[in-house]
Length: 446
Image (cartoon, rainbow, N blue to C red; front, side, top):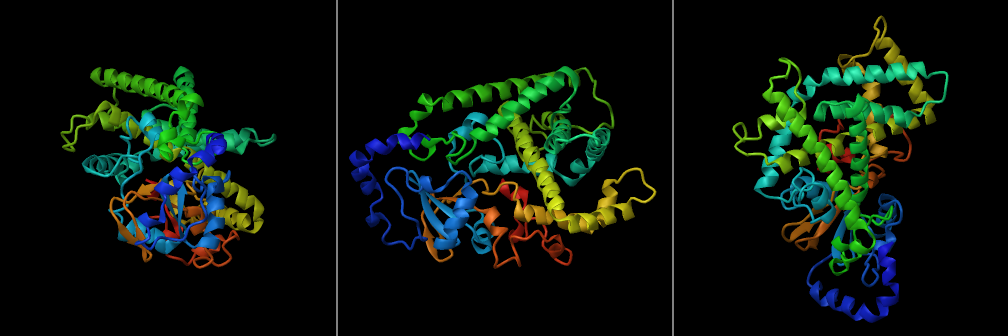
């Protein structure tokens, strides 16, 4: 990794580190406990290949709120419900900002999307567009037929291959990609030439997700965000080139989708009563007549990218983990099968209406989310001013990562936290709607 190239230089610039991290600058503040940091790289060497696990291990020694340094940047790691509640509920506005990310800027048109946009008027307007126009209950229900059609296709595919080995990840990811693609841009993953273009787009999109990593794994750590005077290394190791290449590919595909839709709409080719995909919705409100907030083309494309970020890998990963746990705990699988068979008597298919009565299934999904958070470390936040957090003094511009993976395994909140026990949710009010931070919902990632 890039920062190990600095090892020969450490003796020569150690005095510089001592100057910038002098205790005299922080002695008047009560800061959270910290592991020992190294010159220049801080605590980056302690993250490992699975940062959420490494940070969980560190939190057992240093506590549920600890202060690390990623290069020159102070970073809090919150691993308890109390810390998460203080950040996400009690002082949510103070923690609403996002730290600057050159990767997000490069991929999301200067961070004009929902997840990475900095706090301010644009931040409020763009979230309003997403919640009221793209993710309203009425809009989500309008895509019910898309979900049921793609699930039916997946079941038929499994049925046809039941005598051979099935790549479950491929099946689940294909179904998820098709649903999100149809909802987002009106195309399926396997639809002729457009499907080929979409596959290329999704490959580029997945490369983009890798580049968004803030941790030094997979060789894509952006050292410039944490050690600014070393950002020139991104040109040498090719990271800047990779970001530009991926961004250009994603932009070209989305620009083509939007232009095709503009032409189709001008020719009145849209079917009355047909559920509008996100492209149609965003084009309708682009002039700002409905929202009072005009959407620039880059904003429109950034929102479309967000839909793929939020809905593809995260969805099929939960399904895959669910199947893994059910195969490990056959007792749970048998109970779930019995409930499905009971509700499915006399029916050719299970519909979304049937899900309301499938309490065991809901419990299974919640338990999977508890043990296998879709985003183990939530997207980082940044304090906009000095704030108290669990009796500690947190300076402005401090980043914070909430370790949802660790919170889901906190023995203070869960009995037998390492054991897969869906029944713990059968008589529980804990849900994923955002009120119960023992089970942090996916929506809190943004």
